[in-house]
Image 1 (tube, helix red, strand yellow):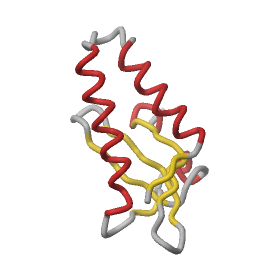
Image 2 (spheres, one colour; image 1 turned 90 degrees about the horizontal axis):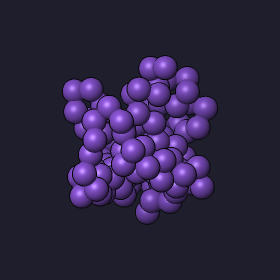
Image 3 (spheres, rainbow, N blue to C red; image 1 turned 45 degrees about the vertical axis):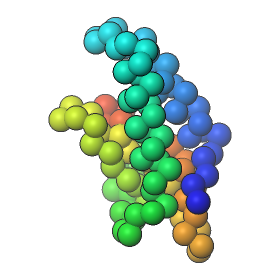
Image 4 (cartoon, rainbow, N blue to C red; image 1 turned 60 degrees about the vertical axis):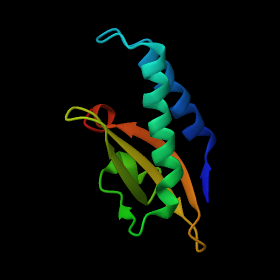
Length: 103
């Protein structure tokens, strides 16, 4: 099962708002809905992964022991930072893009 921290929920809201108001490349509302929906779909499937990668970047390690990378495009990768419990439940703590991780 997948659970979200309050901060992860805020991150998801901020991602949606950021996509909707992105000045570099205007996105239509339907495209933003699909993009955001795909991120949620990936998040909700992390508990079904057969292998869970350890966090590598210091900024990620501060929030969770595991990371799942979603490669949206050549330019944008999303990092889902989470912890696992003994029963395989996933606790998503934060979501970052490579633009934040690299910065």
